[in-house]
Image (cartoon, rainbow, N blue to C red; front, side, top):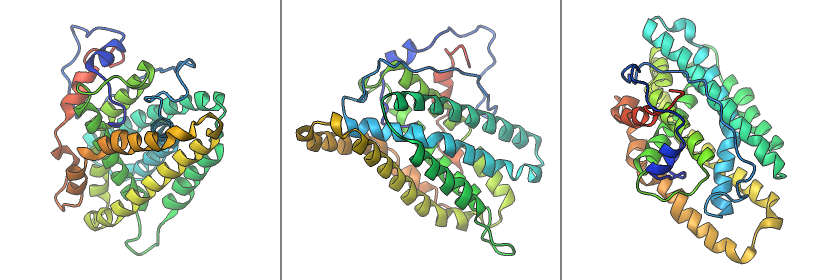
Length: 304
């Protein structure tokens, strides 16, 4: 879900496998749909598939590693409160949010086979992320105090990130060159579109179950932001180190510069204003009305 993966409109359409059905229902962003999808990845893709740049490639690889356990964490933090949700509409949205996130998790986890086939050892890093989220963050609660719902607050913060990354990806999709393999492009575009679709759900649940939600999310967002980029950086460095025999040392300074000024900076150029909107007391994810990105992406998909 990110501007890092910039593709041409032609590339998006080329990965579509079917034309729009004439009797397809009109797109409704509030009707979150669980799409049973089946991605596979070519083993013939280059080792450094993003512009032959190891920094950029491994930044994306780390996303593949952290997404599965992150998505499971999101699902668990929302499901804990399903008995407190009385509105039928939100109940259905929660079910479908969990369905979408579950499929995101399994599809990104498939890419682990490619990483392992290329000789990367990702198990220790993935298990550490899992422990941090499920054994530490999910367990933070002090009975009788407002130190509760920390996992849901963290989920709301991270869902804001994923929705913004999805927005940035689609905002640039027609203006950037094709830089990743089509199978990878389709995966991230599909994921980005569904993140835009369900961006309200965790937030709406949080508002229902936590009276101090504004104070809590304002405190949590800087912490979540710091931890997110810390682990993305650690994971990238880890994979770079494992790849040391495949790196050309003389090219590393320029490759890092290209990463920092290209993929990494583009990722954030459109996000700063929307990131800080999260701190407003009356904030709601739907303020950024970008559902048309998801609608346009799915209209030609057989699985939509």
